[in-house]
Length: 357
Image (cartoon, rainbow, N blue to C red; front, side, top):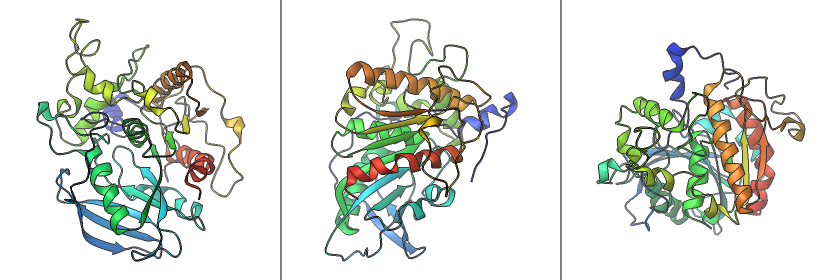
């Protein structure tokens, strides 16, 4: 499991930036009704509770993508009942393996009447349907996840209609944006170091949202403009009237879609970029609320979490303006798994309450 985040020399900044959450294209609410084209081509039973599925679908940019299911005791494909689902979304550079290999989620959910769904997307997918210079088409992650994979799991794998979603980094963006785009699909949302506003403009010359999109697209060997096009002013032009495809960026930004999160229980956690240690490890009592010191400005050497800090401060202010409640834990911390597991455990009771699990 990743621990602290080291100092970030400029020479390796581009590499580290690929770990951030990179948004993708398409717009809010683009997931269409399932046409049944998605199909499971391979099942691999990893353990008593872990089942991996290789899924083929027309929305993918590859022959198959994997989905890891962490199933409850007594689950079977032919059971006479269904189970509520907790969707856990990975970050940029991650996969369907991350949550079970880098956290204790298998032990955390032991004895719970809940199925955990961990889908694989891509390093720069952003949980969105790509613009592709106005042509659309693959990859279409939002349509695949909610329009194809969700109905497939509910039809063939006993997933029920009660759902919650959580994610880290790019997955935090995904959790918030999918819930905003499809109100009522998820009963609760948790974001850990999520990129809450891809249009974030750093006030002090640090990392801005579009910078992360451009750099992370390199990890996919993709033209970043395929994702959402160009954000326009003030990022790519000095002309305030030149907005280019900014509307697509706004449609995929939780900050700009915050109003659509009303009525959904929300949990936001993020650090300030200072790797002072999580002060908690698996097996300890529940994380103490004293960790949430709410640093007013970012600090430390973690440029990724510094940008996340600015994005999430914008989102929480917007939610407050709209009168939308959210549980927020802003702490001293870095962009690392040791912090994300701590926040998964802290938010777990809220997620389970929403599912009745």
